[in-house]
Image (cartoon, rainbow, N blue to C red; front, side, top):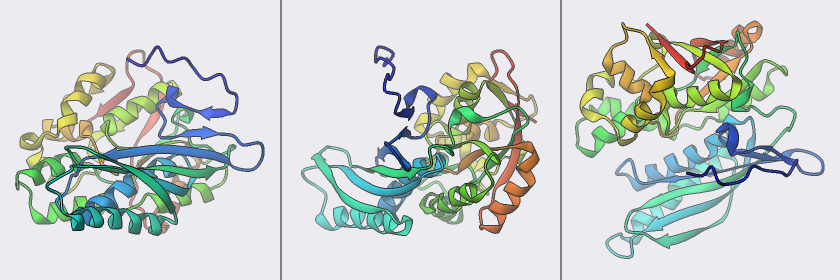
Length: 323
């Protein structure tokens, strides 16, 4: 639909939308480059303060995924003219502000419009070393794949709307969505150059979709061991009856280039397509540095699961889920 938009001709643009990356990167005349992104969405939890926190964590995640440091944010919000009390709006903004402050991000202002449906998020600007940008397009054959958060937030979010989720599962998913990817990103930035070749965060397109984008941009095939992919405890049991809205869209769009092992349970396959909110980082680490990358993440308190590897490109196959 947007194919008519011409490609960039400004050589100061280092990364843009063409590689389906998490954020754009723009080189200044000297020093660090700018890294910019924007993200907002409708409520996925009832608590307005927590909704604001999740929206902020989700927005700054794109900066972390690129290897950048978020610096400033502008709020983007839509609220109905009537039927929403001021305390609720205040709590949403306060939740977002507190999470931005945790990330060390300065809120500069924002823009609010009237909208029948609540929407909230941020445009975020950060700084990044132009020589160490973690693009989607950098994965190489032999790279080891790590995932830093469990899957299942889309299913849990759907189940919450209908009161069909165990409180312990809901608490675990909400806590994950509120958790910044800061520790993982800063750990990757401290590693020796060349340790990590590519990185992306797992959000609306799910692991299957974002993995496909990394594979396509890097011209490799990602081989992922489905049984090693972390998921929230108990989420498979409710996945079938709580298919989130974007799950079917993800499957329809990405499945033609995905090969699935015959032994993979349907409930697990659903979670591989499940759209995530404030999901973890998918990291492609150089094979010779993989043990060190895993150890460094563990030392930083990041529970990174080793889920597969990048292989030579197989025609027509971007991701292969192995059983």
